Image (cartoon, rainbow, N blue to C red; front, side, top):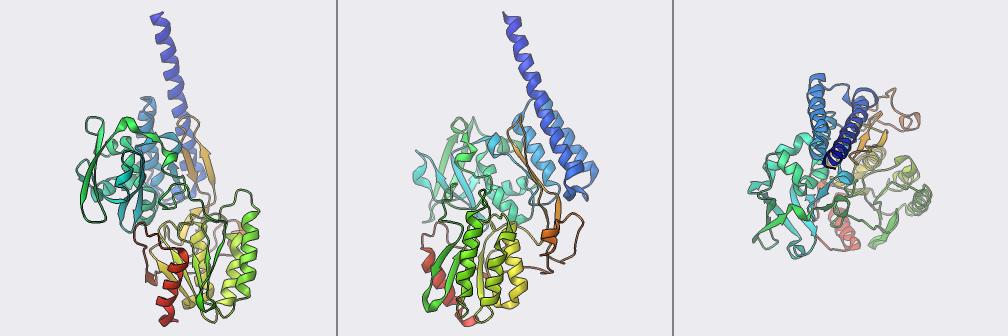
Length: 412
């Protein structure tokens, strides 16, 4: 009986190892064949990290395997290419979000619920900034992009351990700073870990709650003096019907308001299909010729949402004022591609297949023709006016937009 149980355990372990190795094979196919963003990466670096991932696969150590895979895919330096561990791991019941250059706890569960919201100061006595520096190699993209996807690591015990900030006696100690300046120390048991999806969405949007229930693909806000604000929370529409219809309605309205000043809010917009937004871009570019337009952005503005801003800048020039903080990517990046589900680990690989060069406007053989027809040389996208909402500001959007319009009035 004992020998039989041992055989069963060995068989299960063998199947798990084979499966993790199969996950690695799919990742290697992305690195070596599919994704052009790896073309400039040193092959020796790739080999070192592949060996590391293979070692963890052989040891059936899923979390370490995933962290090695994150490091490997981050070598491309491309924000669209990364391993998304969310569906494969458990995290402590703490939602951390980057606001400005700091990390904040925005949501947690009882009995810790009363400490949110507050600023994260240290983990296990280690300053947040030191942990961010150590974690940088695991995160893909620009420094701003890393601020978007990095806070999850503060709640992932295995990541903290891998980075050298291991849990103490199966507990993790957090130090927070409240709004009134007081510091609070809290200890969380690693046994309290929960499925990551409860606190972190795959596409991080930066909202206080991981589930962002926005009111439609286009929100219209009538402002004083006949000005108009248009909020665009997402360009991703699985049904492929509601989004185009909403854009067409918004474009019709914008075309009827040629004497208005426009505010377009794409904060938290992680992208989707920018081609669907072209009728609205055309309408704004026409109607904003008189009084201009401001677009609100943040670090969570990404992919197609950045392209939306880039085309508006090209069409309107200085009539467009970009307000907020640096967005989550530059104007030259690899995108398209898709997602690969890794059957054993449960993680997802986001890979890229096409170069988008909105900086120089140069064509590339990998760029789909329908996108290449729209690409224009935008140069650099600089922020014209810094604007970062105070943490957990509950000011209604209408009031915020009115305030921004008044502040920008003297520059128009």
